[in-house]
Every structure is written in C-alpha cells, then in structure tokens.
Length: 405
Image (cartoon, rainbow, N blue to C red):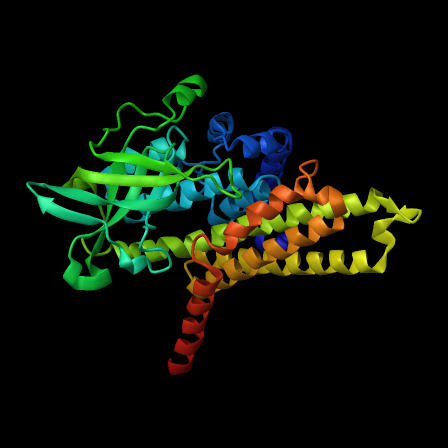
C-alpha cells in the first residue's frame, strides 16, 4: 500500500514509535505472558506513558490528541507482535472509553475519560450475556428506576477487562415493552481484582472511583488465544447506580452500542491484519533460511505461491481496513465498509496463520516459534465484535437497501 494514500508524516512517526515499542518491549515477553495467561501490567504502565491508551481522545481529556487512523496504526502494529497487547488497547479505547466520549455528558467525560485515557485504570464494555451473543437485542440485564437511582441485575459474559478493569459501560433493559428501544446504557465502577499487581506497577486502581455494592467480576475465562488479555464475567446483584450515571438518553443504549460496534469492527480488522502480517513476516523469514534438498525452501514454487497469496491478501486487507477508518474519520457512512474489513481481515488472519504454521513444518507446531500463538490468537477474530456470519448479514442488508434507495 502506498503510505501517501492514507498516512501523513505524523502517522508515519506514530507507526515507527509503536514498531519500536512492540519490538523492544512486547516481543520479548509475549510468549511468557501467553503461557501464564497473565495480564501485562508492566506493559500497561508503559503504554499509558506513551499515550497508547488514549490515542484518539482530546488532550484536554488526557488523550494523545491524534486521529482515528493513528489509532488503527497502533492496533495494526502491535498485532504483528502480540494480539493480546493490541486487543487490550482496542477494547479499552473503543469499547471502554469511546461510548463515554461520544455519548457522555460533560460531567461524565471529565470524571471518567482522563483516568481511562492516561491508563490509570482499565475500562470495558458490558454487552454480551449468556442469552445475548449475536442477538445483542436479547439483553436480559434489567435496570429498575427507584428513589433517584437505578437498580441493575444481570450477568455479562466474555467481557474484556472484566477482572482487571474498574470502569464499565453496561447495557440493561429499562423498558421491556419497547424491545431494542427499551435498552439503556450505564457507567458502573468497581475495584480491579488485581490490587496487589496494580500497587506494584503504580497504575490500574483509582481509589476515588466508588465501589458499587453488588457489582463484581465472576469467572475468568481460560482461553485458546488472546491469553494475556483479561476476559471474565461481570455480575450485577441489586447494584444501585446513580441516575446521573445513565449514559445517553434512556432507551438509546441499543442504537449507541451499535455505533460503538461499527468502530470496534474496524479495530478488530486492524488487529486481524496485524496478526496476518506478523505471521507472514515470520514465514517469509523462516523459509528464506530453512534448507531442504540443499536449498532454502523459499526457492520452491509451492512455497512461493503460498507466500505470494498471503502478501496479496494482506495488501487487500490494508486497503479495506484503512479505507473504512478514513471514512469514519471524515464523518462518512462506514458501517458496510467496517463489516467488510472485519470479515475479510479476520478470515485472512486464520488463513495466513494456518499457512505460516504449514510453512514452518514441524517447528510451526511447537512453541519455539510464534506462529502457533498467532494461529491461536487469530480464531477469535472471526467471532468477537460480531461473527463472520453477522458481518455477512450486515453487508447484505446494506447491499439490498441500496436497491430500494
């Protein structure tokens, strides 16, 4: 891809900074944290210091004051080295912080965004439930108005930063009779489950945030991939949430989280593209030095064809993802393009990582090389932020709507 098509000098400088951080700080520890399924608090502190946890937010709210394309560059570049680090930034920024930035009152923004954007605490988004996955409108969590506050009851599943986070945007039904128009959003707070670790590194816990009684993390998931990213249940048992913690207007929760997911899909496309490109770079390097039959295996036509296909698809993925980001940044409609980018890049991540493992031969199936981790990390990209099947439904709806316009 021609850098000049989407990137300014600022973008290129950001890319170089993130590449260096990924190479020097993340690559050496990625395998260890994956094996231990341990949240990388030391990296969180360093990423906060670099402004990577608030890339697209205004400086007056503690952010780096950069644009959406800069943010996608960060996710893309980190994804080449470790998906867990890239996903941590993506979920924290798009899911945990962006709803407050976009739909919050001035008071809510001032209260919550600076501690999130600077990485002082981690944020998350409570949407998925045991009975509401792809059917996001099937929310069962309830919010009942009572004496100037709302009482929330329910369980959220597969929530990124559920254990380690402290600020969450959570969806709940305020009027069952209104269907999706009866879903609202709220800002909830709780202490992190890893107080000792946060005390050691100096970030991750903000004592001024109220511990809402009855709001806690539940089961932590033991996952195939993204193992250094925290995923857990969120449990709400008669949680009293002040009325001023409603995010946006009552009944606007569904509409607002669909907008949030559009942006999230571009982020997962960037992450998927990073995984694919990282796996390709490993395969290219390995096949150029691995010898069989007296010559590098990269000399064999079958290997060259596979590398050529991977490189071509990665180039196509870059255009899809950065085009969707450009549309979003410039206020253009981008829902269809976000779905296309997410669909293509996530499925590309699987194809590319499987191909990279194959090109490594038996070594690709061991933990001596990172491609096996890349392959495990790739699968969830076809599921999270809307499955591939949901993306195809979204794309088809846009196509059919164009016929009637």
